[in-house]
Length: 213
Length: 289
Image 1 (cartoon, rainbow over the protein chains, first blue to last red):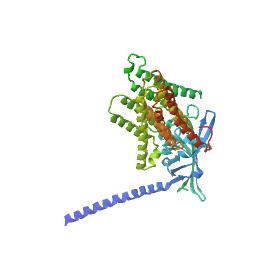
Image 2 (image 1 turned 90 degrees about the vertical axis):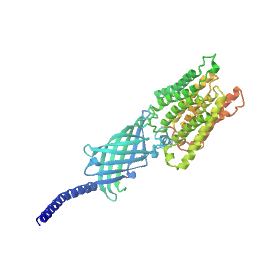
Image 3 (image 1 turned 60 degrees about the vertical axis):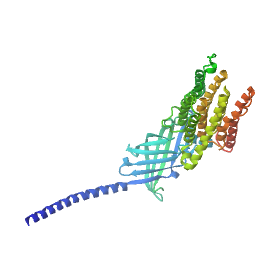
Image 4 (image 1 turned 60 degrees about the horizontal axis):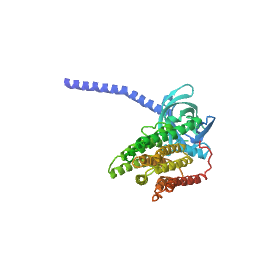
């Protein structure tokens, strides 16, 4: 009888200990899950609205003037973390075939082997790899730019122009940035001796909506 | 701008021409008059055209990426491979091995110069048909021209090819690619250098070397521009143009030689006229930039 009671006592003690440990862990797991849900709840996925966005570039022509052009077809997605800005992610895709400089002959030339070579590299891609806050509404974004089939790392400064609930449009995010790249870094060397500058300034203005609106 | 023009004249024309002349002279040794008939410098043609083209290519385009990332990079690679194939053709080997090497190079040119967009947008069956057709067309032009070169030494073949590719350069320029026009100009200048040496050394042959670089590069340039140029049939005209050299083959006279050389340019001019005709309908700006 004594041995039986001892065994029952040990089993009860072990059970109570297990229950205690489980009880301590449960709130922590719940807290972790709650935190994850909270973080997901803080992240909005915005899609670029092409009708209210612009992708524009300029180059120096013959060393005397700037010639501007734009791309008419592009898309992208931005995951915007309201709590932790370093977790923002940006992905944008531009169709190189949609280049438009208000001149059919020049646009055909730009699509050809001398410049974008769109038959082989129809898409220009940007994917962010890291974000740092740099004060105010500005962010330093590290990313990879794929242009003319060549991928290079670049750093750009992006400004949050605005974030608000717009009547009948929902939540809207506005971003803008301007940066300069050397097209020769991406294998586009035609005309850099003087006709068309090596440096290309790219100006982006995106308005994005949640759910693709 | 002056620097640009100087660069074009020196590196894209004078240097390839000069390099081709030097290579041909070293290979064919025109000063060895007493041993003239025994000197065979077939390998000189491959080195002349290949090295001349590579120097001009790097001057215009800078060094290619490795692995190749664009059509330009493949042009450089095909020039290097062409030199190797040209050297191999200058040594004795069974015909079937020689033809096999040519087929492999033509197939590589056909495959890699087809744009990624074309390759990804068609089924395997269509790609096989396109690739096979292009491969056989390039192989046919090369082999028939090689046969002609074995029968006929002297400057007519390199000179005709030089003029033809120079005319094709204008075609590429009007088809919205100054870069391909420049590269065709480099190839034309190299062939011109070989032709100049052949004018003073009549036993110089274009066979077993020179054509191994010139024809694959020429076909590669046409295929690269094909995705952008109109109308559709003009690349076919350009590719078949070298076979015009077979015309008047039965005549042995100076007039026949001149006529043969000039006749090779006619298909390129036809292609250019067709291209310009198609461009007349487009409202386009004057400047290429």
